Length: 126
Image 1 (tube, rainbow, N blue to C red):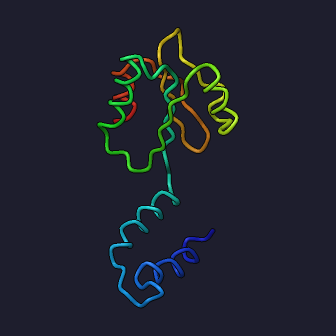
Image 2 (image 1 turned 90 degrees about the horizontal axis):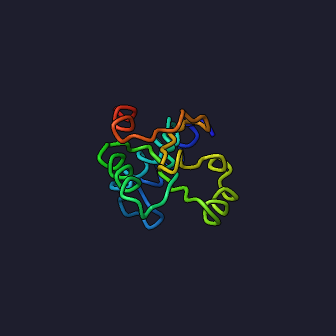
Image 3 (image 1 turned 45 degrees about the vertical axis):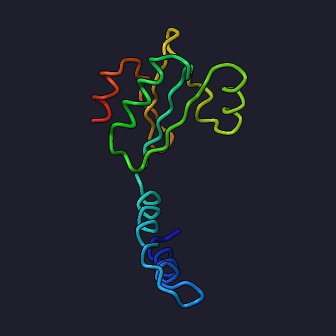
């Protein structure tokens, strides 16, 4: 979809709804959606057991950063992981490394090598 086409109709809808009431606050949500659509976005997959402290620490490291265009996903092992891979083939080959949680940083379906240390994750997210 061309951006000018998207903006043409949606900005008018954000400003005035069908009942004629001003909807100025909708602009912020519209601009956030537009920014996400234009990209780039960062896909972050954490492969591991959510009960492990290391996995939770990796989630915390990502959440501490302001990354407005991120999509974060937990990829567990076992049947839940297989079910998720059926919905999102991108995560099919993503697994913990040496029984430790691994973080996969991806953009446009291209992923970097898995990260297993929190210090490396924080450096990669700079």
